[in-house]
Length: 129
Image (cartoon, helix red, strand yellow):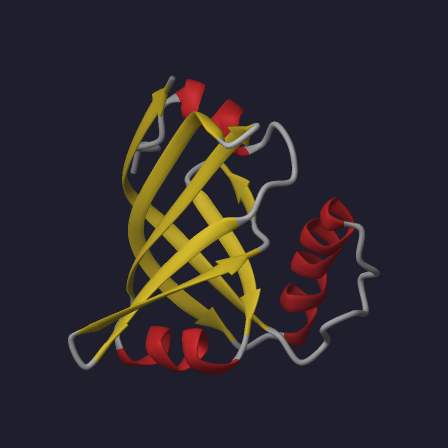
C-alpha cells in the first residue's frame, strides 16, 4: 500500500517536537487529547493509557491533528485519519518510547505504564499559512 501522506506534510510532521491532538470516539462521542508522537512513512505512534486507550480498543478509527503556531498564529497544519492498533508487546513499546520520549525531553523509562498505539494512516491533508 502506498503512503497517503504527501512528502511536504511528512517533512512538517518530523520537523520538530510538537503536540498532536489525538481524536478517538466512544459511544458516538468524540474525545480529543494532546499526545506526544512519532511519525514515519505513513505510520504514527503514540504511547497512551486511560480513556484514549479504552476508546481505541472500542473503535480503532482515529484522527490526529498537528499544528505549528508562532505568536498565536498558525503556520501550518496536518490532519491524519486512520486505523489504530493497540500493540501489546513490551519490547515494541520500549522501542517506541525510545523514539518518542527523548524527542520531548523525557527519559525512555518515564511513563512506563503507557501502551503503544500504532496508527496506519489512511488519508492525510495539510495546509501552510
